[in-house]
Length: 225
Picture (cartoon, rainbow, N blue to C red):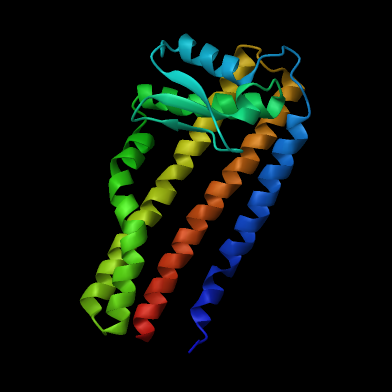
């Protein structure tokens, strides 16, 4: 038997913003992906140049499958760039490559928010799945202990999303600053790269908002129960 959960309406703002953010980031990336940079550097060349400039010769740059799957893995010290970024000379690709390099530089410089985020990843990996299971079991069996435990575990997810925001913003700011300082991109090109990274940042804001509203929803459900 299906039932209507009125608390779902709490999530609507985040769902709308998330959908708009995904549309925006794809449209912005495609727009500036069609515009090639004047200097003609590929995303891989930019990443390698910026890493070497910081003495990060041991950080590997590799190509991976997928679209907009670019990331930096601090565990194996590797910048992974999607095919559209790795070999492309577009403004969008250079901006994304520089952004991921920014994370490697954060790692080298022991940037506090990145260290905090990395330290809680194992907890979050467990909490993101277990919190809802524990909460629902507590909800069904009227166990306030399990309900509160589920809420506590989900709080770790919220903290992770909030800490992610300064990490991503800082990486983008580093990327834009160094691209301009080294004249890898010029003024109008910098504006294009900034548009791409700003659009990408909206997806992290949407994820943080979603986690906060999910936590509020859990509190409302626990009170109703």
